Image 1 (spheres, rainbow over the protein chains, first blue to last red):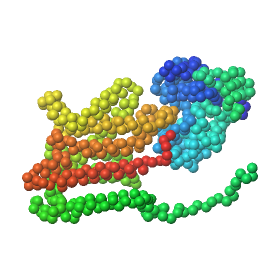
Image 2: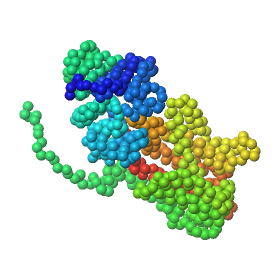
Image 3: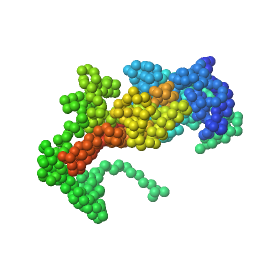
Image 4: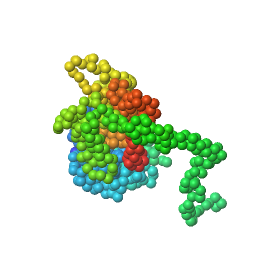
Amino acid sequence: MSNTRQLDDTIMVEMRGVNKWYGQFHVLKDVNLEVRKGERIVICGPSGSGKSTTIRCINRLEEHQKGDIVVADTVLNNDLKNIETIRREVGMVFQHFNLFPHLTVLENCALAPIWVRKTPRAEAEEIAMKYLRRVRIEEQALKYPGQLSGGQQQRVAIARSLCMNPQVMLFDEPTSALDPEMIKEVLDVMIELAEEGMTMLCVTHEMGFAKTVADRVIFMDKGQIIEENVPDAFFNNPQSERTQAFLSQILNH
Amino acid sequence: MSDLSKVRHEMLPDLPPPENTTGPIGWMRRHLFSSVTNTVLTLFTLYILYILLVPTIDWAFLKADWFGETRDACTSGGACWVFVTTRFSQFLYGFYPEDLTWRIDLAFILLAVQLAWLMIPKLPYKGIVSVLVLFVYPIVAFYLLYGGSFGLDVVETHKWGGLSLTLVLAVIGIVAALPFGVLLALGRRSEMPIVKSFCVVYIELWRGVPLITVLFMASVMLPLFVPAEVTFDKLLRALIGIVMFQSAYMAEVVRGGLQAIPKGQYEAAQALGLNYWKMMGLVVLPQALKLMIPGIVNTFIALFKDTSLVLIIGLFDLLAIVQAGLTDPKWLGYSVEGYAFVAFMFWIFCFGMSKYSQHLERHFHTGHGSR
């Protein structure tokens, strides 16, 4: 995959001067980020660097106190209508999958189309099956999440998000809670998704994934964006000392 | 190096477990006779059971007198169930006019049929039956029990009594306390300060007073505060007191269940675009209610038994009416039979609820963990 693809000029996610505090603790400091349609961004950094918080601000799982966030032309403010509009257009995959354990895999996937998009049940289940097939797990549709392996659960979680037909997908360390032999099946699904042109923001430590898939890699530390670049330059010629130290720690082991 | 190398080329087959570790004999060996001390304890317990149970069964069943008109029928020296059987209809219906008791029967048969329909997993149309039982049935039951329309004579509530009154109090208390409890619990966890403080004050206030106080307030003090022309039915006042009291308890049970739901469940629901009520109704409460079944049923059982406290404000529930029967000079001295009967009736209903809750817990079990 080429790293210098021609991208659409449409801005899908825009963060301008975003600041966030937990009480007195300043967790995000002046974060500026523009994501174009179809762009694939990998955010990395040490734990506590604010990378998860950054993407969680995009769909208001965390509230920012200063700055502007615009997602798919909707301004993210305290208006519940806007928040719900944005959440409909933004899919999210979590580290711990967060499937609904009381519902079957199929019901997990069909829930939001039925109740948020008002899709008729039969049609919603068809959509659900379509995406379950795409993540190669359709034969588990009638099982409960507790009966699946971690990798399978994460693929269901991806399918569940896709059922809402989102314009942007957020991945919050999607492979960190998985056993090593299951990481690949999830990354494969994410790579396919990228090839289909999905706009993606991934917080991950999978540097192989970043090298092959990302259009841009962003390195965060202490709540700030330290460095961002195309993967080639980012990995081969990092400019900041912090980036160099981080990369040497995660790549040389 | 080669000394440390070990390789298995053939896999071991599955073998059956050793004999005497399975089946009833294996179970008894492991649990009852595993050591000398255990064997002695087992035999001692069997002996105690023997000396306790045999006379009880003898008294309650073998030597008991069941039917008759007066206490003279009790001749065999065992339990005199004649006291219960001759007054059985009064114990069931209180002072409800005898020719109208079919209305009570019909009301409870209707309820039983609908509940059975909901409880038997295979039957269809559960949704319609739930709507019937929650919205249509209460109106039907009101006219059947109280009357006043459809050509049914009014039966004032002071004539109600016995087991039917106990059940009316318990069923209405249970059905009303759960939704109020859920709302109060959600309110207490709300981020809106006014809603939250209202719920906290309500819960702490009602939980902090004994039910007896609530009932006294409802029956004695409330009339002092409202104009003399306004009269509330005494039963209605007691019911409102019970519901308000129990919903405060229920709220805390529900809150406990809500706290056990991981934050990730809320986040996943929000990220999918579900609003607050859909998130609660579709994702959080179904899981929380499953966890809360033991606590909810515990509260239901306590509520069921607490209904007997209405006797102190002059309502004749099952316990009160049996007690009243015991003061009849013709039946003095049969209080053991009377109270045993009351205890048995309460136990039947409470045990039934307990069993059903265990069934529900198994039914809702969908594999491990909630993530």
